[in-house]
Image (tube, rainbow, N blue to C red; front, side, top):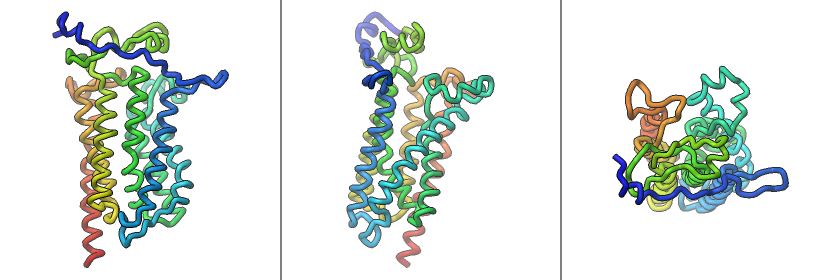
Length: 295
């Protein structure tokens, strides 16, 4: 229950313009810059991983810098196309079927991480087959750098005042209404006047910073890249549990709401649950494959 003391302690939501800069008539949004920053910094860190031979089996990476340079365009298409198509299929299908033009109206809908993951996976499989490099090793490199993109993406969500959390009276709750948010929604504040969890920041911290550090420890100190598939599996498991946890604080998409008549089950949870099983399978498969090689 909100009290006057709670309201006095509520943090103001910063009035940040979703448009970072204007290049003439073309506005450049923070969301787009987040994708660029995530991909470029991820590419830079991936090059550091493949350059460090001691992290890999036989002290040699099967992936070269040239492979990464060629792959960057593939992964960009995989993330964007997969993310948009996934959002339509998982979250917005009824609205798109009723009004097909909505499929390309990205300002009225978002991107799905799970769809982006599927799109990126398809891109990686096609790329490794074309270039005759080990698929699981590329999976591991991309998994190791993925939290960088997740971090920037969630920060962009926060700047845009979107994907806010559930109503709360915690001291750090925020009212996600600002002049820029209201202006972007035709004079309406979609989140309403109630203070909410800044769940975007929770996700940036858990899916971004913490998951990156976990994978850093496994790659640098546990030499997990020597067992292809291990880093991929740990990433998938880590993201799944992180997302399920944050979903308890995040407001579900308005067009879906809570599932199965509950007040807690969300589509994000449903999509993340199979990832736990997939991640466990990847780790077990990697360990068994490593054991066979040693034998």
